[in-house]
Picture 1: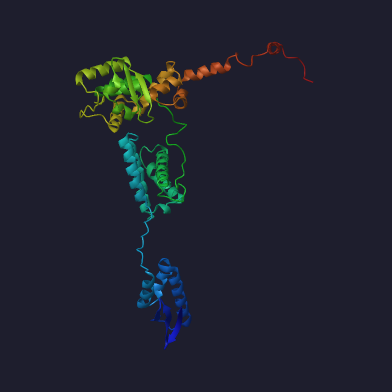
Picture 2 (picture 1 turned 90 degrees about the vertical axis):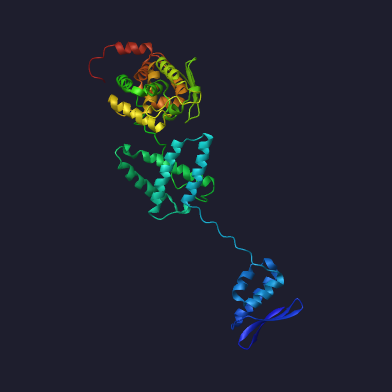
Length: 407
């Protein structure tokens, strides 16, 4: 048993421990402090080497006194595990980038999509430098709302800002990035700071922009060396990436059929080759003698496979030569869809050809076909149906109106 005893002006701890008499200095002149230290020593000895009291005793006891008691129970200081630094926005971007690039290698995403994601991440990184925010935990919804205002202002300064509609895509991308952070537990115990607003590109006032018959004629005459690209877009309705990525193995000239799994929706489409496109492909095949894995479209300037940005630029150049405003590859997709509907194809037929859903066809393309609207009018105004006009209703309608005032 141990006790605190005063010797001269200072206090000591004295007693018997393991059959040995102990007398060690506490280096304190305060009686209450000495008694409290002795009490803590006894409790630490009872609790053994795992007691948490040893760290505090090491701070208040003289080194020789502490070592004597600590060695008696075999206490050793455990190395402290440094706390992991809080995850930062840079950590999230690095992990998200690695995950996205793995999906690109697997064929689930494209390089073009990553470039758009990378742009949004870069603009948000630059914005965070202003308030000096780096930790994910510090990115709140208020910070994101400030970013939206900042980003919208930057977009509206551009010449072709389209009313700042690109902001919706930035918000959707950021929402997806922070959803990834929550999924991989980089952001724990918080909701997604980016509130999802709307799907980018959903504009009820927009929709399809098909070329007119006159515009198609001018574009065909101005196509020049890009005639094959023009015909491929015009008669297949492929999206820009699919048009530039299509290979000769996906075209069956004998069966006059194009078969491909679309990149965006991963749907297999079968597109019959229009005679005009069939002739152009046969001529190209005879001249180039391509291998099955070669790209169909090549850049006339370099002889290398056509890229999506280059296809957009060359289509825009065709439009400028033909004096057609707003010419770009996707408008040919709109044109084929509307053209098929005009020729009597059902929305299901169009959806299967384009690799879209029937709902998308009905929403974006069907409203542009006047014949479909008129057919709906005839159906609604038809006298046949559940309610047929009663015979007496017709007789009453044909009777002359009574003379005089109504009572």
